[in-house]
Structure formats: structure tokens, C-alpha cells
Image 1 (cartoon, one colour):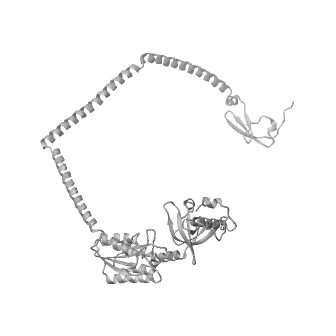
Image 2 (cartoon, helix red, strand yellow):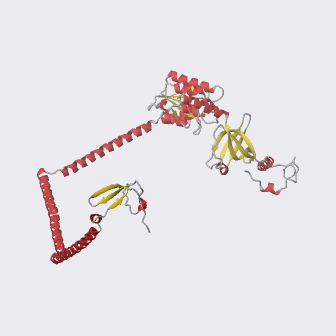
Image 3 (cartoon, one colour):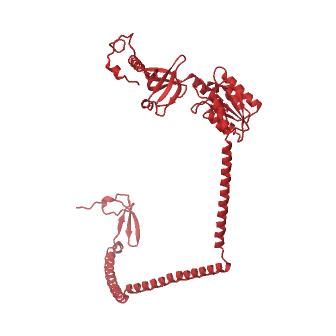
Length: 465
């Protein structure tokens, strides 16, 4: 933004925003002071505001600043967004984008251009032209017009090159200059057609169909110089894209600058970033081909020489490796003898170590064998004492058993019965010990020494006290 000069700052301002002390009608201002005054008035009277419009002529400078035109159906205004603000925008606008910018209205004093100093930008939908471009591109893509498999290779040695462009276009001069410099032997055929304006798309398509029908050239260039999206709109015509696809020879599209893309670019067999680049792609210079052939010949010669040298070295190496069969047999016999010696040593050494280990184990076993003679004598003594003890114990137990048997015989009920006594039991086998246990007309059993007797009780008498 332009700054006030020292002279303008030092002078006070009157109500009309001109330096005080002179008549406004007679005041003579320099252009710098005038532009600075107007810029100050715009900035003071137009605070930050939001403006909507469509992006056109967008440029991103090497410094990172953005320069573009904001337009609608009836007007346009230049705009600038400096790098410090642009890096926070969140997206990079493209041609045809409809955006809303928050900007300060100002004036670029060095050129006197009224412009917007943009501080923020946000999307507001695609522009009408760009939206139509995307819709048509999507339609033709679905039909397969832009498929990579459909693309045709360019001829290596074209005999004639056709050009579809305007006779007044600067791009035509650039293309002819490039072809004259690179391949003056190639014939050039021009199919003139307007490249912008109403009806230009139909005329471009007609020129392409005419070139295809006449079949005079091996490759066709469709080109024009750079411009805004409106200037290039003729090459977004559906008829142009279909004519390129139906063309009988490969088509190179060189429309606009490197950042410009049209439907003709997608439909063409090859897209060039500029018209001059299209001419360079269509015809390779003869000098380049000759240089390439010479380079290839040199590479082939060097490769053959290198292969011969490598083969010779391989033969020498193989010849040094050849030996007579007798020498080979001697070598193998020595090798076999060495293996036999190693085998014998390998078998003897473990056997010797095992024998030595067995002898050592026998010595250790002999040293640890117990003395059994004394233990046998002691064991025999223990056995004799045990047998004597058992005999004495058995004799004592027999005497005790005989005494217990005699006592048991004395208490045997059978002996009592043999002395004339009887044992009385009731019908249930219970021993009758008192008269109260017996009732008249009850049967009782008398057990005698040599049998039993069943008797009936006539009467029961209690013992008298």
C-alpha cells in the first residue's frame, strides 16, 4: 500500500482532504500525492467488507502473493491477497471459482489502479462458466471420450503437420517459428478458424473435421495463446471435443498456458502446456535424430567391444582352471587319504577316552564297595537273638493261652448244665431270671445238658421275702 510523502504529511488537511493554505481550485498536486490522497479516502470511507464474485485471471507470484480479478455479470475489480494472508486461506482458488472475500477497498498508488486488498477468502460455489465446464467434462468422461486407452501415439517422422488456429493469433507465429527451426523439411498446412468469440467453437470443430477428411497431414495441432477462461471457452465446446476424438490423425492440444486446461486438452491424444511446446512435441529436430543415432551407434560399438573383452577374459579364466585327469585323480586321492586319516583318528580317540573313563569308574567303584563280612556276622547274631526271643515269646504266649482256656472252660454254660442245672428261655429266646417274666399258660423252654424241653406254665408264684 502506498505511503504518504513527507510534504503531504507535514501540511494540514482541509475539509476537502487537500493540503491547507491554498485554494483548492488553484492547488497543483503531483500524481503520487493525488493517488495517496484517494487511497486514504477509500480506506477511511470503506471499512473491511465482504464482496462476492467469480475468480478470473488468477496468478500466484513467486513471492507467494495472489493476484486475481473478481467479477460478476456486469463488472470486475482487481484484487490482491498478500502471502501472510494467503497462507491461511485453507484452499487455493481456481479459475471460475465463486468466492466471497473480506477486503479493504484501496488504490495501488504506483499505477493508480483501484483494487481490493483481500484479508480473507471463502468459497461461495463455482462460477457459472466453470460449473458448465465441469458438467460437460463429467458427461464426456462417462462416454469414454477422455479414456487413456483411446489415445494414439504420435508419428515418429511426420511428413506434414496441420495447424488449427487463427491466422491472426500470435500462437501461430510461435508454432511456425518453432517448426521452421526444428524441422524445416516438414510440410505445414494451416486450417484457419477463429479461436474466440461467438460461434468460434463450431468453426474450430469444422476445421478439425475438414483436416480429418482431407487427410493431408500426419499429426494435427489445435492451439491458441493464453487468456482468461472466457477467452479459452471456445475450446470447451462439446463439438470441438467430439471432433478431436473423431479425427483421423493424432491431435496435439496446445491451448493457453501451462495452468490452463480445456476439454480440448482432455480429448486430444497429447496435451502440450503451450502452443510452442505443441510444435516441439510434433516434430523432433533432424539434428536430434542424427545425434541420437550417432550416440546409439557409439553405445552399440562400446557395448560390443566390452562384451568381446569380457568374453576373452572369461575364456582365459576358464583355460587356467582346466587341469589334466591324472592331476585331478592325484588331487582327489590325496584328499581321500586325508579323509581316511581323519576318520581313523576320529574313531580311535573316542574309544580310548571311553576305555580310560571305564577304568577310572572301576577304580572309584572298588574304592566305594562296603566290607560285608563283619556286617554278615552281625546280621547272623541279630538273627540268632531274634529266633531265641521269638521262641521265648511263643512259650510265654502258649502258657498264657492255656491259662485263659482253663478259665474259659470253667465258665462254659454247658458244664453247668451237665451238673444238673437248666437254662429257662421264653418264646422269644430271652433268658427268664424272675417269675415276673412268666405268665400262666405261657410256654417256656428248658435247655438241659443233652437237649431242650418245652413246658407250659400252670401258675407263677413270687418268692416270699
